[in-house]
Image 1 (cartoon, rainbow, N blue to C red):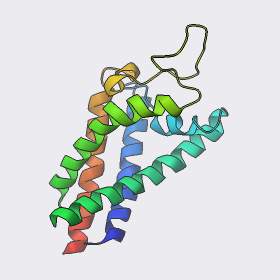
Image 2 (image 1 turned 90 degrees about the horizontal axis):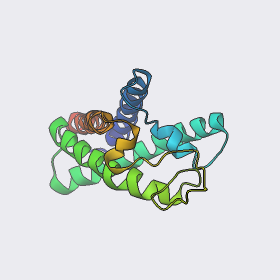
Image 3 (image 1 turned 180 degrees about the vertical axis):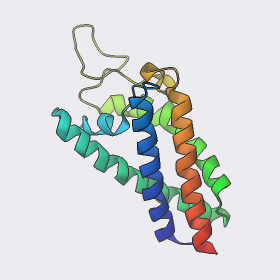
Image 4 (image 1 turned 30 degrees about the vertical axis):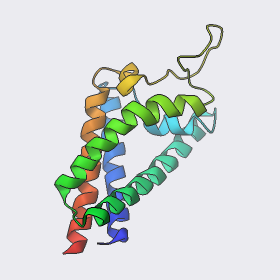
Length: 161
């Protein structure tokens, strides 16, 4: 198995994931913009936040692809369906812990359940399964993360021969 294949798959998968999320936002299926949420933790300037967010999102995409690769190595198997399963777990982790619980704790411009009434945060807390950004958001997150995982799994499987 090839780490390079996993990273290339991670780049392509992140491109598909990010494009899918952007399309869903443009079609008013969700209000979530993960790259902007990430970038606005580092900058109050919206343009700079978007640029930083996309860079962070692609960096995290490669980092998670490395994690998928470690799982593939550990079980000595890689395929699109196994990658899809990891993508499902990844989406559930993102929606229940990472963006829902951890990001609001460290994000200086995001509300939390502990925010005081007199505080006016710039961003709404995502909530459980990111439901504060729309009822279809969990389904969209699952779809794009399953695609992300399938792409990584297939790239690693193809490189394996």
